[in-house]
Amino acid sequence: MVLAYWCVLVAALMPFGFVLYAKLAGRNKMGLKENHYPRQWLEQVDGAQKRAYWAQLNSFEAFPPFAAAVIIAVISGGSIGAINFFAVLFVVLRLVYGWCYISDRATLRSLVWFGGLACVIALFFVAAIG
Image (cartoon, rainbow, N blue to C red; front, side, top):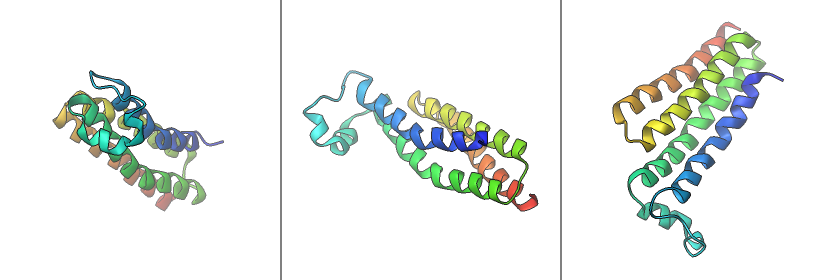
């Protein structure tokens, strides 16, 4: 199996890691009572918990173009080495992005976000020349 496919799985699951952090970290942990209305509860938290929630939302937004780029690059016959490289780099950058978001490093977060977008664009170029 192509390593990039595993990266798609990791990217698909990554948002759940961020929201788990939001629910369990900090002084305001989510309890059984709050689980009856988790979205409302997540809107009320602040600080790192709120930023982890936002990292989750952004990860859901970043996933579809990445998954499409990997699939298109593979079925178009692109270089598996290049596809794997950009897929792994995307996952690493998205993990760093989440860390930057949670730890409130806004400028670095934006730079890392652009790096992830560049990986998606690069995957489409790999598909085009494949």
